Image (cartoon, one colour):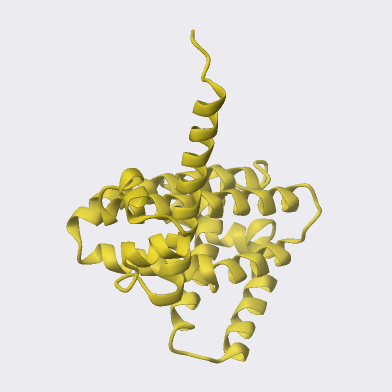
Length: 218
Protein backbone atom coordinates (compact mmCIF):
# COMPACT_ATOMS: atom_id res chain seq x y z
CA UNK A 1 0.00 0.00 0.00
CA UNK A 2 1.41 3.35 -1.07
CA UNK A 3 2.24 5.69 1.81
CA UNK A 4 1.18 9.32 1.67
CA UNK A 5 3.91 11.76 0.78
CA UNK A 6 5.02 14.47 3.18
CA UNK A 7 3.11 17.11 1.23
CA UNK A 8 -0.02 14.93 1.26
CA UNK A 9 0.26 14.44 5.02
CA UNK A 10 0.69 18.16 5.51
CA UNK A 11 -2.37 18.83 3.36
CA UNK A 12 -4.38 16.29 5.36
CA UNK A 13 -3.26 17.90 8.62
CA UNK A 14 -4.28 21.35 7.34
CA UNK A 15 -7.65 19.96 6.27
CA UNK A 16 -8.25 18.43 9.71
CA UNK A 17 -7.19 21.67 11.41
CA UNK A 18 -9.58 23.67 9.21
CA UNK A 19 -12.42 21.26 10.01
CA UNK A 20 -11.75 21.58 13.74
CA UNK A 21 -11.63 25.38 13.58
CA UNK A 22 -14.95 25.44 11.74
CA UNK A 23 -16.62 23.21 14.32
CA UNK A 24 -15.29 25.32 17.19
CA UNK A 25 -16.28 28.55 15.46
CA UNK A 26 -19.80 27.24 14.82
CA UNK A 27 -20.33 26.51 18.49
CA UNK A 28 -18.85 29.87 19.49
CA UNK A 29 -21.03 31.83 17.06
CA UNK A 30 -24.24 30.01 18.01
CA UNK A 31 -23.48 30.61 21.69
CA UNK A 32 -22.69 34.29 21.13
CA UNK A 33 -25.45 35.36 18.72
CA UNK A 34 -27.98 32.50 18.59
CA UNK A 35 -28.89 29.89 16.01
CA UNK A 36 -30.55 32.13 13.41
CA UNK A 37 -27.85 34.81 13.45
CA UNK A 38 -25.10 32.20 13.08
CA UNK A 39 -24.51 32.58 9.34
CA UNK A 40 -21.93 30.57 7.44
CA UNK A 41 -20.18 33.85 6.61
CA UNK A 42 -19.83 34.67 10.31
CA UNK A 43 -18.64 31.15 11.05
CA UNK A 44 -16.00 31.29 8.31
CA UNK A 45 -14.76 34.66 9.55
CA UNK A 46 -14.61 33.45 13.15
CA UNK A 47 -12.67 30.36 12.04
CA UNK A 48 -10.40 32.54 9.86
CA UNK A 49 -10.97 30.42 6.79
CA UNK A 50 -12.40 31.21 3.36
CA UNK A 51 -16.03 30.58 2.54
CA UNK A 52 -14.79 28.13 -0.09
CA UNK A 53 -12.97 26.13 2.60
CA UNK A 54 -16.14 26.02 4.66
CA UNK A 55 -18.19 24.81 1.69
CA UNK A 56 -15.58 22.16 0.92
CA UNK A 57 -16.12 20.57 4.33
CA UNK A 58 -19.80 21.48 4.76
CA UNK A 59 -21.78 22.06 1.53
CA UNK A 60 -24.91 23.15 3.43
CA UNK A 61 -25.46 25.14 6.63
CA UNK A 62 -27.34 22.21 8.14
CA UNK A 63 -24.25 20.04 7.66
CA UNK A 64 -22.04 22.19 9.86
CA UNK A 65 -24.80 22.67 12.44
CA UNK A 66 -25.26 18.91 12.71
CA UNK A 67 -21.51 18.30 12.96
CA UNK A 68 -21.25 20.93 15.69
CA UNK A 69 -24.16 19.38 17.60
CA UNK A 70 -22.51 15.97 17.37
CA UNK A 71 -19.22 17.36 18.67
CA UNK A 72 -21.00 19.16 21.51
CA UNK A 73 -22.75 15.99 22.65
CA UNK A 74 -19.66 13.81 22.22
CA UNK A 75 -17.62 16.20 24.36
CA UNK A 76 -20.43 16.39 26.93
CA UNK A 77 -20.65 12.60 27.07
CA UNK A 78 -16.90 12.28 27.62
CA UNK A 79 -16.97 14.88 30.38
CA UNK A 80 -19.92 13.25 32.16
CA UNK A 81 -18.28 9.82 31.95
CA UNK A 82 -15.02 11.16 33.36
CA UNK A 83 -16.75 12.78 36.32
CA UNK A 84 -18.98 9.73 36.90
CA UNK A 85 -15.83 7.60 37.02
CA UNK A 86 -14.46 9.85 39.75
CA UNK A 87 -17.60 9.17 41.80
CA UNK A 88 -17.24 5.43 41.25
CA UNK A 89 -13.59 5.60 42.35
CA UNK A 90 -14.47 7.54 45.49
CA UNK A 91 -12.67 10.69 44.30
CA UNK A 92 -15.87 12.75 44.17
CA UNK A 93 -18.99 12.63 46.30
CA UNK A 94 -22.46 12.06 44.90
CA UNK A 95 -23.28 15.59 46.00
CA UNK A 96 -20.30 16.84 44.00
CA UNK A 97 -21.62 15.02 40.96
CA UNK A 98 -24.96 16.81 41.29
CA UNK A 99 -23.10 20.11 41.45
CA UNK A 100 -21.18 19.20 38.28
CA UNK A 101 -24.39 18.32 36.41
CA UNK A 102 -25.95 21.62 37.46
CA UNK A 103 -22.99 23.57 36.14
CA UNK A 104 -23.11 21.61 32.88
CA UNK A 105 -26.84 22.07 32.35
CA UNK A 106 -26.91 25.75 33.29
CA UNK A 107 -23.93 26.85 31.20
CA UNK A 108 -22.54 26.85 27.67
CA UNK A 109 -23.20 23.17 26.94
CA UNK A 110 -26.85 23.49 27.85
CA UNK A 111 -27.55 26.78 26.08
CA UNK A 112 -25.97 25.51 22.87
CA UNK A 113 -28.03 22.32 22.93
CA UNK A 114 -31.16 24.34 23.75
CA UNK A 115 -30.62 26.57 20.70
CA UNK A 116 -30.37 23.57 18.39
CA UNK A 117 -33.17 21.53 19.94
CA UNK A 118 -35.55 24.51 19.83
CA UNK A 119 -34.79 25.06 16.14
CA UNK A 120 -35.28 21.36 15.36
CA UNK A 121 -38.86 21.60 16.63
CA UNK A 122 -39.88 23.62 13.56
CA UNK A 123 -37.38 22.23 11.03
CA UNK A 124 -38.40 18.70 10.10
CA UNK A 125 -35.25 17.96 8.09
CA UNK A 126 -32.93 19.14 10.85
CA UNK A 127 -34.99 17.24 13.42
CA UNK A 128 -34.75 13.98 11.49
CA UNK A 129 -30.98 14.36 11.17
CA UNK A 130 -30.55 15.29 14.84
CA UNK A 131 -32.63 12.46 16.30
CA UNK A 132 -29.99 9.72 15.82
CA UNK A 133 -27.26 12.03 17.15
CA UNK A 134 -29.23 12.77 20.32
CA UNK A 135 -30.23 9.10 20.60
CA UNK A 136 -26.54 8.11 20.73
CA UNK A 137 -25.99 10.71 23.45
CA UNK A 138 -28.76 9.28 25.63
CA UNK A 139 -27.67 5.70 25.02
CA UNK A 140 -24.15 6.63 26.11
CA UNK A 141 -25.52 8.26 29.25
CA UNK A 142 -27.67 5.22 30.03
CA UNK A 143 -24.62 2.95 29.84
CA UNK A 144 -22.81 5.32 32.21
CA UNK A 145 -25.73 5.39 34.65
CA UNK A 146 -25.87 1.58 34.77
CA UNK A 147 -22.24 1.49 35.88
CA UNK A 148 -22.79 4.33 38.31
CA UNK A 149 -24.84 2.46 40.92
CA UNK A 150 -23.95 -0.62 42.92
CA UNK A 151 -25.62 -3.49 40.99
CA UNK A 152 -26.27 -5.32 44.27
CA UNK A 153 -28.34 -2.35 45.43
CA UNK A 154 -29.95 -1.00 42.25
CA UNK A 155 -30.83 -2.79 39.02
CA UNK A 156 -29.75 -1.35 35.67
CA UNK A 157 -33.26 -0.03 35.11
CA UNK A 158 -33.39 1.60 38.52
CA UNK A 159 -29.97 3.20 38.00
CA UNK A 160 -31.10 4.70 34.69
CA UNK A 161 -34.26 6.08 36.28
CA UNK A 162 -32.37 7.67 39.19
CA UNK A 163 -29.76 9.42 37.08
CA UNK A 164 -32.15 10.42 34.31
CA UNK A 165 -34.37 12.00 36.95
CA UNK A 166 -31.34 14.01 38.05
CA UNK A 167 -30.58 15.11 34.48
CA UNK A 168 -34.21 16.07 33.88
CA UNK A 169 -34.19 18.11 37.07
CA UNK A 170 -31.10 20.14 36.20
CA UNK A 171 -32.16 20.49 32.54
CA UNK A 172 -35.54 21.90 33.56
CA UNK A 173 -33.86 24.27 35.97
CA UNK A 174 -31.50 25.29 33.17
CA UNK A 175 -34.48 26.34 31.04
CA UNK A 176 -35.73 28.48 33.91
CA UNK A 177 -32.43 30.37 34.15
CA UNK A 178 -33.16 32.00 30.79
CA UNK A 179 -35.85 34.19 32.34
CA UNK A 180 -35.37 33.76 36.09
CA UNK A 181 -32.26 35.36 37.53
CA UNK A 182 -32.51 33.99 41.06
CA UNK A 183 -29.39 32.07 42.21
CA UNK A 184 -30.84 31.39 45.66
CA UNK A 185 -33.90 29.69 44.19
CA UNK A 186 -31.77 27.29 42.17
CA UNK A 187 -29.27 26.73 44.97
CA UNK A 188 -32.08 25.64 47.31
CA UNK A 189 -33.31 22.99 44.86
CA UNK A 190 -29.81 21.72 44.13
CA UNK A 191 -29.02 21.40 47.83
CA UNK A 192 -32.32 19.59 48.43
CA UNK A 193 -31.53 17.10 45.66
CA UNK A 194 -27.99 16.62 46.95
CA UNK A 195 -29.49 15.58 50.29
CA UNK A 196 -32.09 13.30 48.76
CA UNK A 197 -30.12 11.57 46.00
CA UNK A 198 -27.89 9.41 48.26
CA UNK A 199 -31.04 8.14 49.96
CA UNK A 200 -32.44 7.14 46.56
CA UNK A 201 -29.22 5.52 45.38
CA UNK A 202 -28.41 3.56 48.53
CA UNK A 203 -31.12 4.11 51.12
CA UNK A 204 -34.75 3.75 52.06
CA UNK A 205 -36.06 6.40 49.67
CA UNK A 206 -34.92 4.30 46.74
CA UNK A 207 -36.31 1.13 48.30
CA UNK A 208 -39.68 2.85 48.66
CA UNK A 209 -39.50 4.30 45.15
CA UNK A 210 -38.86 0.96 43.46
CA UNK A 211 -40.78 -1.27 45.85
CA UNK A 212 -44.24 -0.33 44.62
CA UNK A 213 -46.41 -2.57 42.43
CA UNK A 214 -45.90 -0.43 39.32
CA UNK A 215 -42.17 -1.14 39.37
CA UNK A 216 -42.40 -4.76 40.49
CA UNK A 217 -44.61 -5.63 37.50
CA UNK A 218 -42.03 -4.44 34.94
